[in-house]
Length: 473
Ligand SMILES: Cc1cc2nc3c(=O)[nH]c(=O)nc-3n(C[C@H](O)[C@H](O)[C@H](O)COP(=O)(O)OP(=O)(O)OC[C@H]3O[C@@H](n4cnc5c(N)ncnc54)[C@H](O)[C@@H]3O)c2cc1C
Image 1 (cartoon, helix red, strand yellow):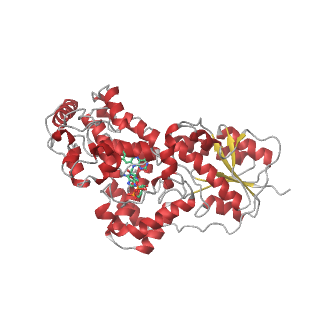
Image 2: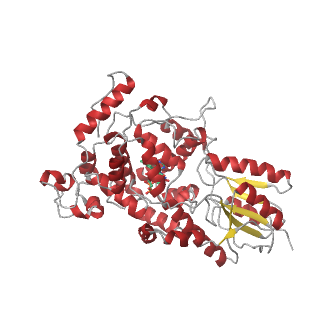
Image 3: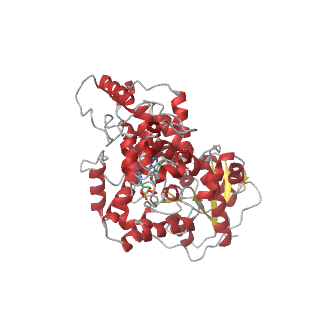
């Protein structure tokens, strides 16, 4: 029997533009396609997504004549056991950049090489790998604008790869393999949880759906993206984030398709958003504890409030601020929230409720289908003012101004907070001004009270009265 080569899939459930897969096919050896589940499955939206992605990717590989073999256990033990049991010649994977994954991969690469089974790793998940965009002094950038200008100047635009025309698959040996589970196991388990129905209705985590979402966006929204992207009621953004997180599509594929279609302001803005994603990974690369440590240490002394009731109201979309509640309910039901509303809802938690941003980071990690440790950590620290290139803490987003500006007719609010549907376009932003609406809470904190409290806390932290305290938008 010819020795196989192994393709270890991680966040790259695709056949096209998959450099590891293409390189493995080029060896001419039969392929063993594997996934290693090395964590306990948690009841989160991201695990729901992963479960469906494994199930559907297995079906896709079966259509090509193969299968996705899912192993369970720590990768540093499981992978060497598989290579030994299958007498694999080489291992191929696409690089990941999260601190834990990076450490495992580095060690495994050395270990596999020493045991005579070389491992080859490839780029694909980002436009630019985290260590490639550096200042002239060789340091990471701390400001997005400078980072993105430098990135755009490199001219290193990796062309995307086509899917392999044919793949020859190896069969698994019957013995000596580490524990395995069926590719549909996680999905079946997640289906038993009550709250995944909304996710099932909203998303199909596979490569085809990713490209359909891309095409719909390019046809319908790209040219207006710069002007419409902040309007949560419009289908103006790509909704590609979960597909990017799981690698059903790559930024290189998106860039190529977008550039071929448009030269508008929309394209420039859209590419910059993909740039923010790369920037987030470069920040995480330099700051592995991005999700848990204030990047500006002066915030370690911030008097965050212990307010479980407020946190619960925020999580459940019961704050009494319609735009915040609409966003939090969209998140709970669909696993996704519009970016503008993410900013408003996050700001409300941190500044109005003065709850530690890490509580919000954890809730988003639990509920987002597009959760990734880089974008989530960086954006939370951006909103909280504790991070790199962050909005200053004193810049409080006023949920009423935001609501009137970005959802002026209340269409988004009506969709997610149906109790308020009968209010007029003016009333819907401030239901308490019409005496309240049965079944919908009064604001859990008054805006002015919250603002004064947040600014005093910040002022005490700084020990100075300087700063643009009136800034709010
Ligand atoms: C508090 C907070 C937490 C967030 N957590 C996540 C997260 O866990 N995962 C995640 O993918 N995004 C996160 N974002 C960023 C952003 O909200 C989403 O990427 C975006 O809403 C996804 O929708 P879209 O695909 O339609 O975006 P589009 O507007 O179509 O943008 C295209 C792509 O650019 C990237 N992008 C856009 N905005 C950002 C941004 N601010 N930061 C990084 N990348 C960006 C995404 O990959 C997105 O798919 C967070 C934002 C905030 C304010």
